[in-house]
Image (cartoon, rainbow, N blue to C red; front, side, top):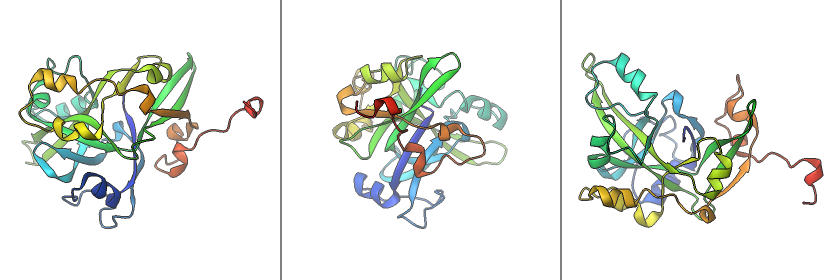
Length: 249
């Protein structure tokens, strides 16, 4: 599943890529648009990420990862549920109570420069990989969002979930335990995803795996999960050196 992603682009680069300005001030580096948004974020920290949504197609906003449906009753229920809604499977998104309203009426784009997944080597060993699209420096995940009003403090939460689909041939080899991958939209389909007139069949037609030939990947170090060290650094996506025996391969 997709729980780790990178937005290794500046705020200015995102504005240029999508031809939309940022709205709001919730981003940590919003006052300096030449700063990088994030080299690595982990869904379980409930990070704020850039979002372009159906409710505001003309701006890049800030929503939090981990969808809280509008019908949630309290903060305790919200915190429990959002750890289960980082992703939404495209095969069941129209059926699940947490997602079925959002997929029909609240779709959004999540900008990214890459994402991370683990390849199972053995019961005790997993190798992290960085996956990216060489022809698209910045691309978009297909996602859904929800708006929840906390009845205790009247605080509004805008949260999202990234859609996943079956793995293509590249991701089958990397994510070899569950063989899933995030739904990635090519640029020409991004605004289609935000079209409020889409019916279910049209929505589903956009949630197919992007072709393996569009993607590249390589193994990275375990810095991404190393305790006591920040993973939000450029080094997190550096490829690990090949073993000595592979020097001339």
